[in-house]
Image (cartoon, rainbow, N blue to C red; front, side):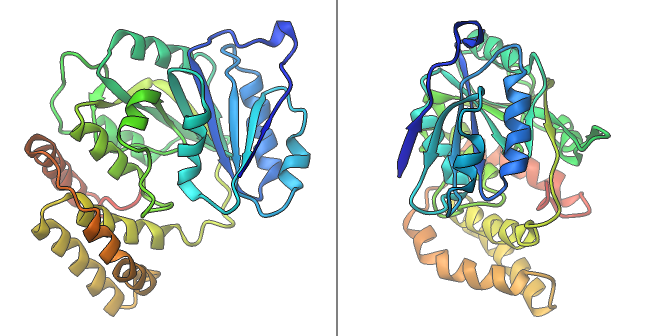
Length: 312
């Protein structure tokens, strides 16, 4: 992996809030990334931005060279998927790190509010933000799911406790993220957020939804056809890694039934789940009792959703 530092910005452009870095992962989408960098450069917080470029060629590097928002460009030797966020956090030099993708960015003031909340709540490990989608700023369906979390409030935490979030709309305490090892390598990408939330909660860190924080998401349709398959695969792997065996067996059975019925992507998801099962078994570590109880409350909430809780 190569890491390309960027020259210090002019004195007047130095970050107004030294507490938070933005981590961006990207792959072969330079125009979208430039739009994201433009939006981040306009933020009043003027955060340093670390970009992890999973591309296989130099087009992205050439496109972003000299951009005023960019503090560091990391170029791994291979596509790292969501694990690119782990690289970015390790290179960050601030106590808090906000995640975004190459098709998303943060609303002005949200990063400062997030840093203030982390300062005021030492046990807080991750903040999930409200997400607005597209030019029409439509509510992401996950907003309502997180807002309706059945988990009881915790007096030393802001917002509503949750065990899930959208990867491009979350802020972490760097020490907490590194404490649990970041995103899990077995999942790579697609529905990887739940396992991180489980691991943070298992280590005593708070994970909450705070709608006062807002991220904007402008997804492109192309290049995302594999996401449902990845979410199915990683949902089962997550249960194998952290949940009791009856829960994991139920998830695996549901996937097998879907594969037998010919549901889109289910056969591939089942095949890759079976390929990864020995590694999941070797890394299996069940949740503490109180976190498992919270996960079961959320299972009941998810079961009532039309998608069974796998999308979002």
